Image 1 (cartoon, one colour):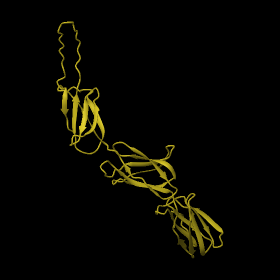
Image 2 (image 1 turned 120 degrees about the horizontal axis):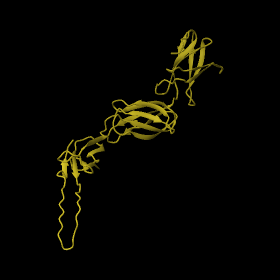
Image 3 (image 1 turned 135 degrees about the vertical axis):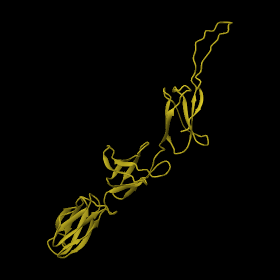
Image 4 (image 1 turned 90 degrees about the vertical axis):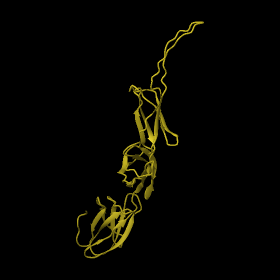
Length: 263
C-alpha cells in the first residue's frame, strides 16, 4: 500500500477497464490553472497517495504506457480525498481449453513472443477457462499443454488494449498400448494392431515392434475392440530338379492369424 498521507491529499487505485490493478501506472496532478504540481507511480497493487499543497480542486491524470490517459477532477478539503481511475491498460487473452469430448481441461497456457520469450502464463481452471492479463501487443504464440496428451500451439494477435478470446480445442489424447504374443508367450514383431469402433470403423492401426509391443495414440474417448493380425512368413531352401518333385516342409508359428485383445 502507498505510504499514508494526512491533510490535503488524493489517494486511490489505478485499474484497467476491467478493474484489474495497473502497477507502475504514471500519475500527475494539476491545479485549475493547468500547472503540474506533482507526479507519482502506482504501487504493486495499483494504489497511489499524493500530498497536495492545500484544499481546492485538482485534476488527477493516470496513464499506463503509451495508451490513452484517464483524467478526473477531485475536490480536496482538509483531509485526503479518494479518486479511483480506470485507464486503458494492456490487453488480455482469455478463453476455454476443451478436450476432444468437449469438457474443460486444466491445461497450462502460456503466451510467448516470436523470440520464444515468455510474456504471460497461467493454468486453466477445472472448467478449462483461463485469463492472461496485461499481455503486450503483438503477434504471439499461445502454447497449451494439457496434463496428458499432446500440446497445441496457436497464433494470437494481441492489440494494444481490450480482450482477445482464444478458445482451444485439443486433439484426442487417448492411447492404447500392449503386446502381441504367440501361443508360447513370445512377442510377435511386425504384426498389425488395429483399433476398431463399435461400428467396425478403423480408428487407428500400426505395426508391432520386434518384441511385439505397440502403441496407438490420438484416440477419442470410448470403448473399442483391438485386433492383432500376424502374417510372419516361414522361409526354407529348396532345390528343384528338372522332371523331379521337390519337397519343402515349412513350419508356421501356431499363433499366426487373428488375435483379439480388448483393453
